[in-house]
Structure formats: C-alpha cells, structure tokens
Amino acid sequence: MRVIAGKYRSRRLSSIRGVDLRPTSDRLRETLFNVLTAGNPDALQSSSWLDLYAGTGAVGIEALSRGAAKVIFVEQSRAAAELIGKNLSALEIKEGFRLLTVSSATAVERGKGTFNYVFLDPPYRMEDEYKAILKLLGRSRLVDSATVIIAEHSSKFDPGSEHGKLQRYRKLEQGDGALSFYCLKAA
Image (cartoon, rainbow, N blue to C red; front, side, top):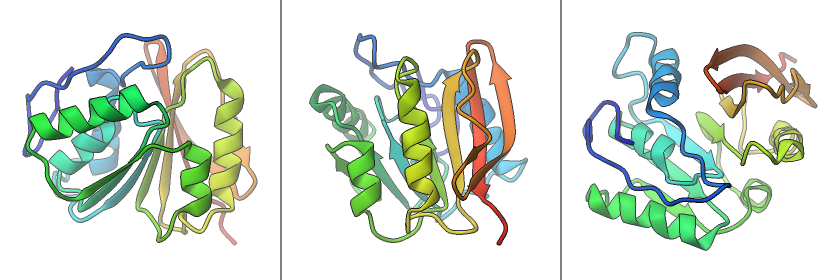
C-alpha cells in the first residue's frame, strides 16, 4: 500500500492484519481521488476532511498529500489508531491532522465545524453501520450543502440511495469494492 500522488507520492504505508482492517486498495483510492479532482490536481488544496473508520489512515493521508489543510482521523480501535500515528510519523506529517480514538458516531455527534469531504469505510460485514452513520451525517452540523460524503462498501452491498437529508448522486464499482457519493438534498 502506498500514497498515490502529491507531496508523499509513492511512499509506503503500513498495515496490520485483521478481519476488520481492510485498507482501501491503491486502485480504488486512485479512482476516488481522480473523481474528486476531475483533472485538476489542485482541487483539494485547503480542503477539510473527516475520515471515519480511518483504519490505516490511507485515505486521509492521501488527502493531506494532495493539499488538504485539515484531516480528522476517527478510529475506535486503539491498535489501528496507533498504526495511523505510525504512518503519519513515518511520513513526517506533523500538522494538519487530528487523531480521535472514539466511535465514528461519537465523533459525528460531538464534532464542530463543517467539512468539505467525509469519507467512511466501516468493516464491510457491519452493514447496519453504514445506514446508521449516513443517517447521523444527514442531520449533522458537520455537513453543509457543499459537503461530499463518500462511503466505501462491498460491491455486493448497497448502502441505500437516501438517508434522511442525504441522497446518493453517484456510485462507482471496482472489483470487490464500491464508492457511493452523497450530498444533502436540495431544499
């Protein structure tokens, strides 16, 4: 696993074995960022990210590498949170991030400010978690009309097209993984 582009391009990231830690593949991560930048490498400059179920931190680190100003990594597992810290340290990233070792629901309920991007990637087997966190995000003050919410999920599972105020506007499948893109419904 490596950083795809930007300041830390081609640098390796560590992972740990475990059923619930399934890093976003390099290929799917590259697809995600190609969609978000749409040919403009500076599109993510100064953006803010909330990386829920952060795992290895690969998505948030990719965002930092591409110019994000702020990433909040949220990971409930202490071992995975330590791994994120290790990956950040190995890349000598010392600012622009915060690492929270709490549940994603707690982070959303207690969070402050709004984010340009929210990425969530619960363990694939926890299908109910998708619906719960998407519903929570739909009524959260962390999300505004410009926020893009991206859910990574198994291509065999559909997290749903609507969750309260959220609606899916795009779905991409790639191998075993898929990305669903959500935004707030127009008022």
